Length: 406
Image (cartoon, rainbow, N blue to C red; front, top):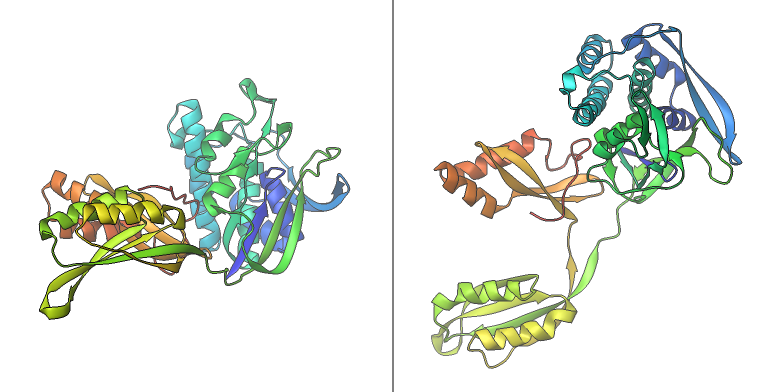
């Protein structure tokens, strides 16, 4: 799969990303055909080679051929996209971008998303930027997208309703869950640029790539001392270095503890900072049934947890050994189930979902509240996660953001 990482350390706008993708080798004709399928001959798209603070870049120019184009609502733009002769992926991606943009603008202005008129970002030029970017990604064969922390800017900017602070409200709304910074003066990221990131890509620093191409797209202004550009790095993901960390494993054989105490022992060890704790039944000398208590911990917690094992069980000693731990990056997302919600844990690596499993505590809580069996709720949660795009072996859903806790 081909991946595009977007450098947004100087900000992003729709035309800047379009210029970067065209600079990386996307076909200008393919972009023009896709845009014309939506808006006809209302715009003309061209490119020019420029410099920004000494760096060469491609400037994508979207010329409006209508002196007074109408302000289009999200519902009318959705209808235009639905009826256009576009590749399915281009249509789906462009629709996802505008849907996010409409929800953000609707939240900011207090109106339903369907009624949002895109006077703040312009109708024809934003359609050309969004459809053009989606067509360029498709033409380059790019299947996954990510970007680093986004420079949003600072100060104030003139808009249809007067002078407003930077970052503008719609950009702030679209930035939920992503890393951002000011990055400089002025409006560095537009709502259209932020919507493209939010809908199409995940938030990550430059991943391991075998680079096959790159491109630099220019913003309108040439700012001294700071190249006003958006860059893309295109390539195939390499096998990431296996994320491993040092750990300590503690063990004790216990044959004379009241078994009713074990749940509290395990809970106490986890509360004291153990990464994991478990029991394995064994048969000891003279045929005595027993349990092996195993505790996994970070090295700095080993002494305290060893003392906890001694204090909470009847053991006379604890074995200690060093170990190396491998752990998939993971996060949590909520899915709607049976009138409630369930937290789902997602393990991922190299831009691919590796594991999907509902958190059982939230499954059990929802089952109790709904009066349904836990098994039924668990099955429904797995199906809801798949419907939301969390599928093992596939990329995460476009624009999805995982949180750090259940």
